[in-house]
Length: 563
Image 1 (cartoon, helix red, strand yellow):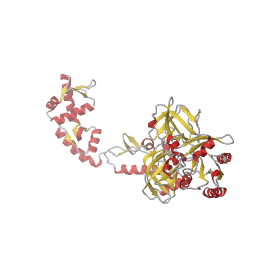
Image 2 (cartoon, helix red, strand yellow; image 1 turned 90 degrees about the vertical axis):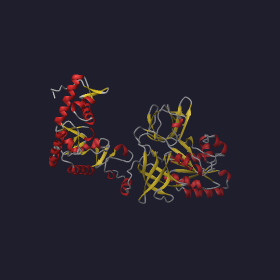
Image 3 (spheres, helix red, strand yellow; image 1 turned 60 degrees about the vertical axis):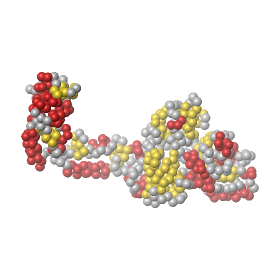
Image 4 (spheres, one colour; image 1 turned 180 degrees about the vertical axis):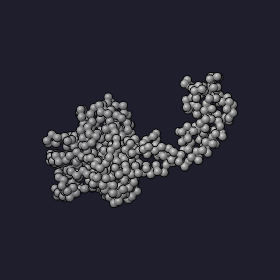
């Protein structure tokens, strides 16, 4: 399995010189870096080990102003090369870089004591002892990039560590955080990064998040060599035709389409270096991304990070929280959590009891990197998973609503939820249009019979004039039973009167090849408003259509006698 090693350490302790001595490549590529003699951005190089295996090296800046850049490089590595100046010993960024590595869960690596050719043996020994206390269990190798002393021993030490390290992100669909983008003549925009999981091959269709843009891979390189397939743990360069350089920046992510929905909230188990208050603002680093976030404490050990901008994440990822300095970090429990605080749910997630945290429907693809193994005890409907207890609660709630529903329409609206189409058929109700009914339930007037008789009397008295009806449910029931016709604006007309108006309309249209609003009004002896409401209902029923200032019959309109 390919692996990536990242440097760490204080500024001027010799990281870049050591990488150059080990690999033969100068990772300070920017003119400003070469002019000032310090690393500003991430640098990359391949490292051949004694057994022929090749590691990818990420060289990070050591200045305190560039810790954010260091984090972006460190999040993709599998083992570390901590560089300590033998004459100075550990300095502030030595400690902060080491803390970041620990927060990221990067436990394996080698300490290189540099510049040993310029320091007395006693001082070197003191620095070596300090390094062994600083990083217990790590080999400490004394080297000089200028003379070459200890370089072979350092390569061998890195090989021993590499033999026991496995790439942390190999499982799962393709995910590569972008750390550089640039243009190459003939290739267009090229992006580079460490491939966390999955594979990338020429011709692949990937998604660039968080923009959601679909992109095509033209070619793939690993350390300047064309390859047919890039694997997890490798440093990869991918050319993306049709993408402008300004359209992709550090922090963007190349992923398999649909595999990693973007996140605006992250539930984590916290590890603090300094106290993090509830409601504190901090920069959240994940992959090469960073986003300002509010830290919502949940109990003593957990927190929800509410992000100002979206990120791509998966269960088990590590995050770093920084203010002026590194405050701490966390292991991601849920990349798509509910907003409410629930310490018990997070404790269950930490134990891996995913099913116990699910009640209401959750999309299975949103659990892709939360779930490990089968979701025993849960029901599935299409892309949704939910508990049987929740389904029983839904059924009971709908029955309670039906018991309170009007007898005229004993149904209740189908829940306006994205899961309704797949899950509503699981409850024992009849679906009629946009409502649910008890099996066999039919609308009845019940105690509304007197109201119905009064309304019908009022409509009969009005004849072909429209009557305002405030009880819409009653009007719908009577219309469904052929006892009135509803018009626009909450008005209605008796069914017999509507038939009379339709016969007048049909007779005039047959005789004059059309009818105007004014003519219809005069024929019925009604007001303009009522005539307009009736004509609009005839249009809606497909009897007439507008043509200029009047109406004409549609081709299949019935004759007056047929009505």
